[in-house]
Picture 1 (cartoon, rainbow, N blue to C red):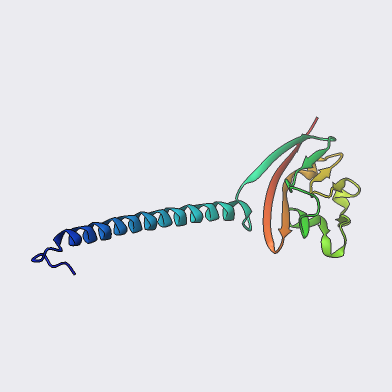
Picture 2 (picture 1 turned 90 degrees about the vertical axis):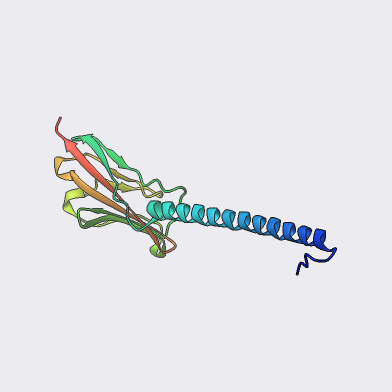
Length: 159
């Protein structure tokens, strides 16, 4: 490469400096790639926490006996989901499934007879609430095989 005994020594210095600058630039590029990869992983991790199968967050909601309550799905747009299902404890109480039409279906449970309304965004309204309606409601939203589960702890208190 560099022959320090000849007159090409200045060329060797230029070549060495060029190599060092190139290595420095390459190091900066690698460092930027590492930072970009870390940022991507953090964003992906955050999205999985938000959009993953289940979050540990339980939203607490209180309502006075006899009043109505709306449990909001927070779905951004009508018909963007494949299925929305609501459960009370482990009992399915309502759902909308695109494969069988977008009409809400209510399971015939005496506890909620004629008191549930599921709108096209997946929000659930419970009318004429009773103290027996207190408990954990679970919303499962399926969009392109990706499931999101939200939980609501509803407390119905007396007048």
